[in-house]
Image 1 (cartoon, rainbow, N blue to C red):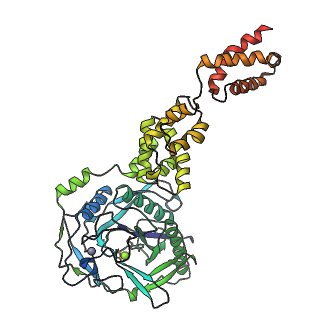
Image 2 (image 1 turned 180 degrees about the vertical axis):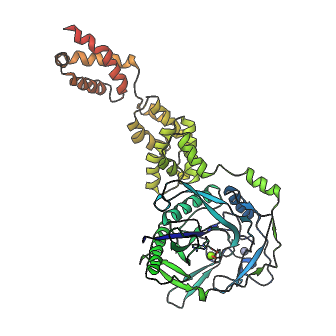
Length: 490
Ligand code: ADP
Ligand code: MG
Ligand code: ZN
């Protein structure tokens, strides 16, 4: 960024809620069904059809509000936001009015030391989070004139989370999105699928002289469907605005779209062309009333929050931050890790297996942890065998783990069946050590003469004599015990 300027960023995120049905009708809330198969008179906007609010969507909004420490409003109202578009069958969107069910709240984020002067956590405040319905989807057919509309998405519940203009760099915006994404996914209120549009972001950005307290004119950037695009679009836009201001020109308030291929933002509509939505209260829905009993019930059902869980992984399990974050890639992955750590009693080894072999197999197969086909308790059996020195790690990885995946039974059974068990028992190792020492008097003589390094050769011979199943540590100990006897002989 050009010196002397400071960026101000506020993000608006649309989160598709994970309800069974749509916000105001009984149609299924699902992605990927045949076009227009999930519709009814309500979400098609047919005359006379009446909306009825989905209680599950309200409870999911409350869960979010409680998780971010927001104010839950006992009464909030729905409004009609009117505009004309092919994918909006009613000609208006039902959204919330001046008071949202969730007001305020905040996320704690790592500050960008580059713009804040010093590292440290800061609070990014939220303005509000309101319930609203999604629109349908316009699809372009062949040729410019052909346009199709799929209304399966019309009426799907959204929670629009409006962030305060508290972010100061593209990095902070990206961190905000990651923390928010993790939160809604771990609360179980959003599937978090960016490609399917379940978590969508519009970014508002302005530039002001460094140290100023007022705000500059903002631009809203749309079409940001990945965290990387948000960062790139904001970096581009901050530079563009600062360059305009450097030249003594003004930034015009407008909506711009991110063109990923060109790597730039393009003007879509200016403030003058901004729509008048003619907002008014929705006459077909009563005010949304939330009582203390319902709030308490939702609060009691909240899971451990993801940021607290990441800290716990670091503090209780002794994991570095990057590993803790990777273990939190999905709720299922984190839960599998915890079950594995618990069942094996070995958190570090459990993390290594999750981030190593397990991840490798999931990537190869392109499936989530739920489809691994091996239960945490079963994998824990393998970790214990390694920990007890009964199975070398290499054999655990290369032989027993694939056998577990192939459904060949427990780790114990596989090891027994294939005769893989490592021998650490001194009674079994001692005779082999004696045998090797007796077979190599010349080597013993050389060691006596000072060639200590040949001890390694003897260890190798003993391991070989044991068919690769002897525990190296046990062999070394036995050699320490018996070799002096042979050295003293001659
Ligand atoms: P609208 O309803 O037109 O989108 P809002 O006032 O609700 O406008 O603001 C929407 C978003 O814009 C919020 O996320 C807010 O943080 C952000 N925002 C507001 N003013 C600025 C500004 N000057 N610079 C950057 N972001 C801003
Ligand atoms: Mg907006
Ligand atoms: Zn419907």
